[in-house]
Length: 295
Image (cartoon, rainbow, N blue to C red; front, side, top):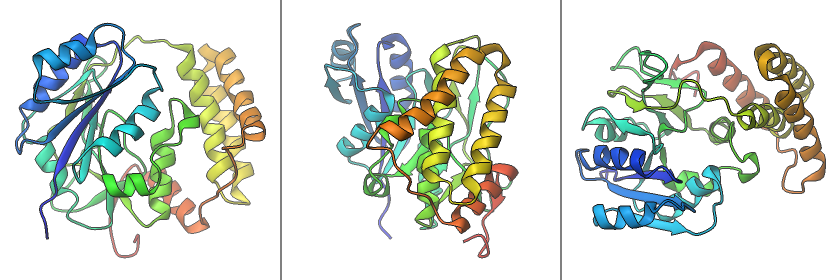
């Protein structure tokens, strides 16, 4: 079997100081993976800095911002590696072996993506998405945007992320479509990616898009008769868990229904009952050991 190659992809906008730390950690990775920086319309001199300081890094800049989801999908078409390893511009690799370990996780052909372990450093020391057993293959329902790897050819065949999500829930939607094609998200075994997301960030747009996109995800993907119950439970949980941000959440819920009705690119394309039940099981359990029965 041919050895898989990797491309590290970072989509960025106006975070050049954070980005430099991320790039430095990429350059330290073993195996010399390609490094692709996708500058999504920065106006703080990001592109000039990257060109001057990192001449060996592949830089793509677009003048007008398309948003993170669209940038990641576009970047995949520009990358050369078999496997795309994605981190945020405010994240770093904690160890030089993480990319090599991620590539090893694709030894089973039914693995379509890997959820790389990560730590939200400024929030908690908890390591998220680490396998409980390095000798077994554990799978989960989805990966996190700042710490994942995926098969580039499969990502492009599935047309990447759905841009209408704008932000939030695009990974969950992609991983469900991946599961429908017979591929799983493997839980990684490497040292973690360190994510320096602000612990007190309160952005009403996050609450809005999380609510909107949970509704759109259900209306588009969940098969009958489960869609009605899924949407009802979603609304209840969104209101219960976001009591401090009820206004953007309610607007998001209503916006989800409105956009589903009005926007032509959003329509029903439900997965099979088998896929949906497997997805729900993975969501409920967190991670499950991959067996012939699960396949």
